Image 1 (cartoon, rainbow over the protein chains, first blue to last red):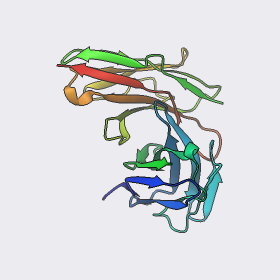
Image 2 (image 1 turned 45 degrees about the vertical axis):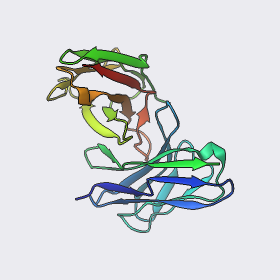
Image 3 (image 1 turned 60 degrees about the horizontal axis):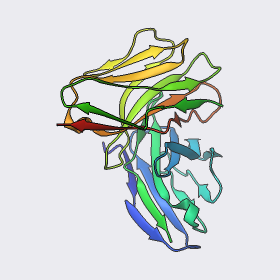
Image 4 (image 1 turned 180 degrees about the vertical axis):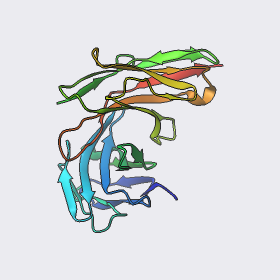
Length: 111
Length: 116
């Protein structure tokens, strides 16, 4: 039972490049989330999913897209990277008892 | 919208001593959950403790306990017998009962230093 895993751990992008942040959970959780954490701040919700095939926007969705084709996977897509997207990205999934468990994070630097 | 406030950006405690981290929140809901997460330098978000608002009894997890004051909308974390491994950023988080997302709303964090 690996919990929530994320890849890559760290990535440098040039402005305008695209990439996909991968997130996988093996706990059969229906709810999954993507957050971003800017320096010295708490986490803010980008997108979430309540189950396979169902996604919705969170607080800061601009510049991102998601898909949820399976219960296990919830990738986050950046289409045209901008310096404002430099952040640490966390994926999380939730138990029925409402506790969210987080992945180790992906640090993204856009130059 | 719900807000979570952590008024102490930094705290320090001597090893083996006790420290209390403060958190207040603003909500109009009566049913919700509160959490404390720990974020060490590795950046991993680790659940420390959670509290259901309908429970009057304060949650405890080994050396960690909370003081939940629902009327005052206060949710402080007490760490007893502090250890060097407790040094981390601590985030208070709120999860309400309305909306489909059920996402967490985080405070800005308190950086805890443990002095040997």
